[in-house]
Length: 316
Image 1 (cartoon, rainbow, N blue to C red):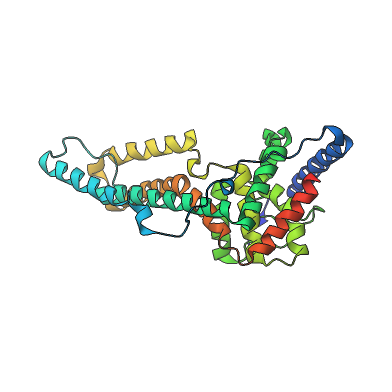
Image 2: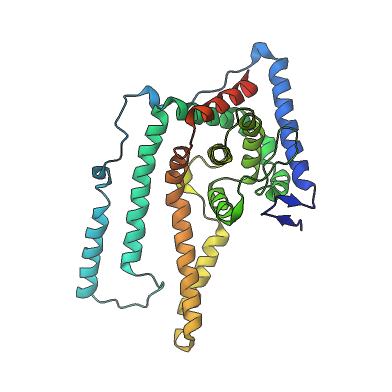
């Protein structure tokens, strides 16, 4: 197994650079094919943009969150039914009613805010340019079979800690420090190593050329990689292994509960809660987090300039 130091970005295994080389070679061959048949070259497909629609108010307003209080009403109704009709079967999970309805309310609020920020992104000329470039790359380049070959993707699993230049040489990682590393790997919930590497190859040379800050570079690269890898951010899939693990925890929570020590019960309850909330974040947090991140950019015009130069490199 390759040894990788997340804090320094160093590795004693050259495999990640081989993967990056393959990525860049695939991109170069695609460019050569495009230039060789200019008469038959297809223009990048444009995705219908909400910016072409009627301009809407995208400022934050509390009234947009009107469905959220309905979870409180549902909780009170459920609580009343519990009082009137006591439970006759054993509990399968340690969750309380406020936890369940609270998680639903927070998830719904995040989805509503994600819709607002999505519309705001489409109506702003700078962010709209970045988003449409990412969509064009997804349609024209990301769909190529090279990026989805199982063997290639298994090798690219070594790449989450890396950022690369177009000449295949590594640069300092984009997530210095413990906090930066944690937030970076959280954002990787909705991306994957191949998409991250492709985004790095396309964007990092121009980020350096325009003098973009590390803060904005990290946001721009991750925004594009998330768009390529998982466009339906709030529908992150649950693997069969995750479902099986959840079923095992439910079984353990019921198995000979009376014989448990308190520490064992707390451990299983804690793991169940961690699993539940991690799934909730993956399903409901990605959509909001994706569009909120682009508005954390400190210099939007410079980020749009990077996207414009990268687009000229890819499609012209």
